[in-house]
Length: 221
Length: 318
Image 1: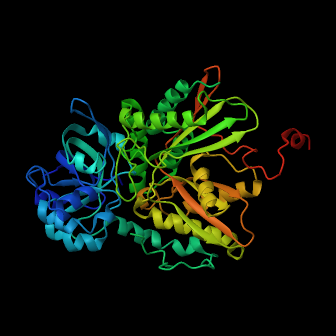
Image 2: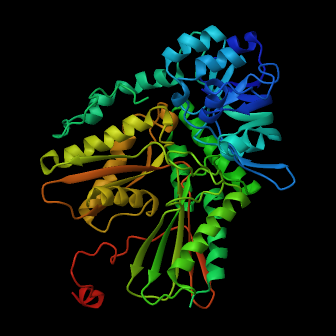
Image 3: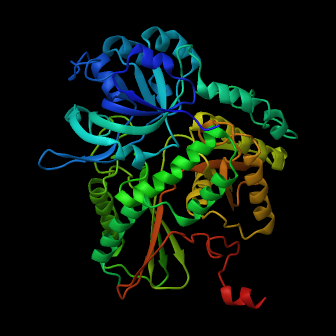
């Protein structure tokens, strides 16, 4: 079965979000900003003023730093864009969502269903995963314009807050929904049925490691 | 004498090619995977990746936004001489790395581990890494750049002879399971396994097995080559595909490299060279010729030698 394709605004209505189903393919239109550990620490821990009107300008937070440069004349060249793994940002996201009204968290690998149920769903937010990873050149084609780069001096190019105007930027995959279900956990559960067979005949290593799990249905995130 | 300007210019071209052009051997492997894949979501992912390689080449933009951590492998024929000496060579490679970071552009990924200082050019303490190899014949220099991703898919474990081949298999599967879920390893990947050496060399062997060997190459030891086939098959039988979705393509190829280790141990490392397997190679001759290719051809009989002396002619006669 071919996945469903959907165009979505980066300031989506709650109805549009409720429509999304796990595994849908999404293309985005509108303003999107990048924010990862550097931005979170600066905005939440150091209490710096966020240099954008959120969520009215954008409700889409991309866990990304682009392959891009700032030219001598102040213009921007953005080549490829792809996401970084989102699970590391779980400690900042609840506060970030509350503060910014973010409805679309876009990144790599998703979060746990526990994250989705405890603060995505209550905030009316879903997770969109990049594809691949990563389709950097395809996503780069969806960048109509780089509108601004905030906090470059403080954080450097890779951690700065890039504000991107997207036109049919994608593909992204819907990885959580308004039930708080997780696409990746659904897939893990299907794969888990086969694990015992592939491990057959092997036994745990003679030298153990502290903190080690011997349950392959566990995740490392 | 190999002109230093030519080295820097070639190195800049290699940085560009590595970031933008998927090597032919990996591309062929992925096309084959896309043909056999039957999982809905993982098929969609592989198809998107194939489109992405086209888009990158057409637009001359990096194929992935995370352009990895650029590094260099340099191989010299025994008679090669570099204008200005080896320190000039290292400076040229650092300059090429910095200028290509701004030029392509690449993502300035390299930061200080504690202070997170970013020079915005992928150059810093110990970065880019430059490693060397030598060959008994030749007056050329091979420049190989690899921009491998840096966070997930790699692990190390000290195994022991009593763990046996089954123990190797188990740790291999563990690495694929741990980092394959949610596609953290950006599979299907070229999996490199390092066996033996001391701890650091074990990691080096595995990394080189993943980034300096091509899809379809086999170890010169036929029993290791058979393990490579078996492990590729085993990894693809987990039932996990791209992004950790249900599927049957996780391993584009599995390459194993070995080094002699402590008699009591059997250290093992696993590395994953991702969907954007960035590598580019050029051979530069003293007369100014430059030959581009994508096969590093690193693991020659000389690199895998077991003997005290190197007498290739005598070995050939036997």
